[in-house]
Amino acid sequence: RMCLSAWLHLQGGFPVRSVDMQRATDNITIRQGDTAIIRCYVDDKVSKVAWLNRSNIIFAGQDKWSLDPRVDLVTKGQLEYSLRIQKVDVYDEGSYTCSIQTKQQPKTSQVYLIVQVPANIYKVSEDITVNEGSNVTLSCLANGRPDPAITWRLLNPSAEPLDGEEYLDIIGIMRNQAGRYECKASNDVATPDVKYVNVVVSYPPTIKKTQSSETPVGRMGTLQCEATAVPTPEFEWYRDEKRLSNAQGINIQILGSTTILMIANVTEEDYGNYTCVASNRQGVQNASLFLYRPGTGRDINGSACVSQSLWLLLACFACLFFKC
Image (cartoon, rainbow, N blue to C red; front, side, top):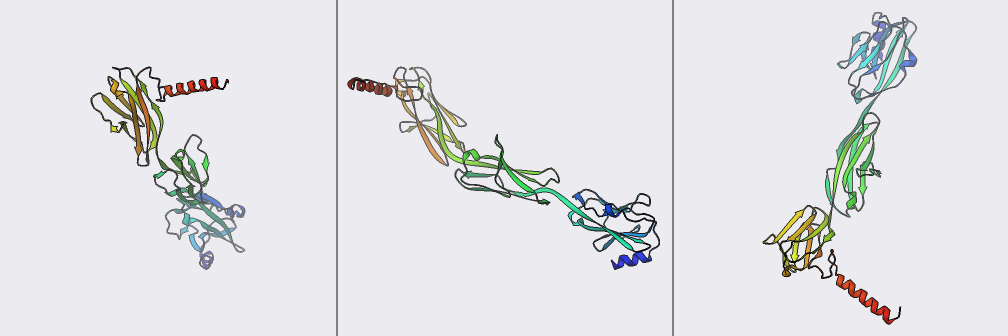
C-alpha cells in the first residue's frame, strides 16, 4: 500500500471519476475457465486510480504492473475503469481493490472474487466380480468448489437412490443387486460428473426348469434342462453312472443357460432316468429327467403318475374301511 500511495501522489493526472461504491463492494462468483470483469466506475473528482490484488499492484492508471497475460483493463470512455481476468482459475480467488485518489483523500473499494469449480470425479472403483453374500464397498471420490454432493444409484428399473456418499457399502450382496452402479457428483456449478461401476455377483447353479419326454419307439426323444448361474454353468448329461457325449444317435446342445439332450430313433433300451448336471466354480446342482414310453404313467416333468394313482387307490380303500 505504501507503493500505491507513493504512486498516487507522484503520477500525473488521469481523467477519472469517483468510484461507484455500492456496485464495487459486491462479491463476484464465477466459474473456473470463464472471464471475470470486476467493475469500477469513476467521475471527474478523481485524479488517480489503480487496481490491486491483495497488496500487489495490477494496474496503475493505464500502466500494467502485472505480468499475467490474462489480465487487462476495460475502459469505456472516462467512466469505467474495470479489471478483466480471462480463463479464471482458483488461484485468482481473493480480494481486489479499486483504489482512487480524490482532491480530499484516497478511497478504496473492494470486491471479493469467488471462483467455483465444477464437480469432478477423480477416482472411482473399477468393475468388480464378487461372490454372493460377500460385503462390497464401492468408492467415488470427487472434488470441486463448493464441495460436491455424491449420490449412488443401481441402474435397475426402479433406479432409486442408495444410502451412500463417497463410499457405498453393500452388506451381504445378493444376485439381484448385480448390475451397473451410477456415481454422480454435483455442486450446481455445471452439469454433474457421472461415472459407472459394473458389479457382477457370482452364485452357484440353480436348475429352475426340466422337461422330460414321452416318446414312442422309433421317434426322437428330447430332454431339456435350464439353470441360472453366474458364471454361466457348464452342463453334463448322465445315464445311470455313465456320462453321455455326442455319439451315434445322441446329440447334446448347450444354448447359454439351457441344455438339450436329443436321442434319435428311441429304442426300449433308451427308456429310463437321465441326470442333468449344471456346474460352475461356485457349485454344482443336478436334476433327474425321464425318457418314457407312452402310457407308462409318467407326467411330462418326470414324476410318477403311477405313484400318484397308487396313493389315490390307498386313499379310497382307507375311506371305505373307515366309512368316510
